[in-house]
Length: 219
Image 1: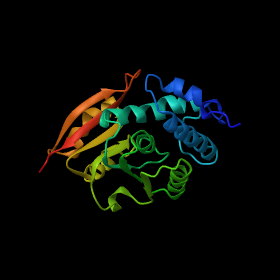
Image 2 (image 1 turned 45 degrees about the vertical axis):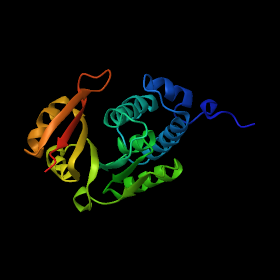
Image 3 (image 1 turned 120 degrees about the vertical axis):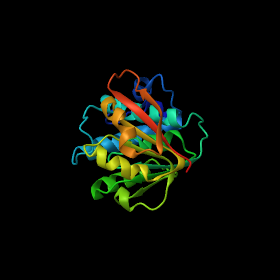
Image 4 (image 1 turned 90 degrees about the vertical axis):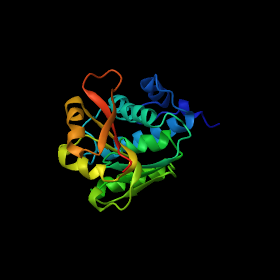
């Protein structure tokens, strides 16, 4: 007899433990299963290439998945939300992949210029059967089109990449950045006058990490 997936053990963290770590964010069973498959892949691939500096599986759940799922609910309170999202510099897939898992009605594009990381992301999309996500192995400057929401996590080249990401947002759309609070204070000045800060929210349990959401003017 096949055991319920909540009882199934993964190499990194048991699925029931993943649910505990994400509390108070309640994740549906189907999404928990996808997250566990994703985490398993991340741990395996991270052993041979640098996807994340965080090595402890539970800390990956708390920090990477927790922040990404929090962002998903802040950006899209409606579980049935639709629209387009572009995740710039996806790397290990945060926050784009968890957002795609949590909000299956969205069309999510993961942009990653590094070939091996893009290959990893394609394997995640395939293994989790994430039909609403696709991977483009290009630089953000090469992407053609605009999206309702563009996401990115803080990177060393933050000041130079942020304007590039901002150009991918449609008029009236939003740019969401997961970053440190000092960078959030700089964000609006970096991307120009046609933007306003919609809100800045600290991640639960953190005094340094924030979700900054900016909105582009309609014209």
